[in-house]
Length: 293
Image (cartoon, rainbow, N blue to C red):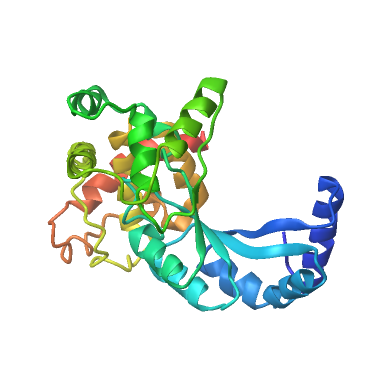
């Protein structure tokens, strides 16, 4: 909503009034990506406005939440030396997605507290497919699927806190018990090995063997090929086409979506995996573009 410097104070004043408080302890510049960082935050000097709000006591600590790739995350983290915390999507299936493990290490290494969102990948890791549930049940250490995912996060000292959606008192109590039982570096080798086996089982559900190398980019027609394939695979990995469709519409514009593929096959000449991309793009569109209807 911010398009010039004045918007920062105006919006902050509205927020304070609605919250009926004089200070917001931890204030996030929300959902930063490279475009918003460069074209809004830097262009309109919003960090200067935030510093004034810190100086006069309206904000306690300044941070940001993030949705983009690691390179964009690194630019944002390194682009301002007064960040105190950040919020990233992170779980045992997203170690190389968005900021990923590298982003976690980078931020923590610079002294930022790291808040983890999507620890259960929107609840999907709490309800794994039968073959993965069977693998978990066969481990000598007994945990729920949700507790496995949460403990994997709490085991990492770089993680400051974990945000998990809860819709019942049972889930609140289970998450509290998980947090109370956690310690950094507390998981045994057998537990870490189980997580790796679970990760591999999920990846075996991948339909298109894309490694995200981006060798076939840029597409001459503007299609973001790796992103389309990633969302297509996501729908199959977690049996969740609706979530994949939502991401497809939110994170890819029309030019970047699979429908823009004209089947020129120039990308296939460069693909090290020899993926028939021009064949898969209509499949991606058929599954993910249904949300437009």
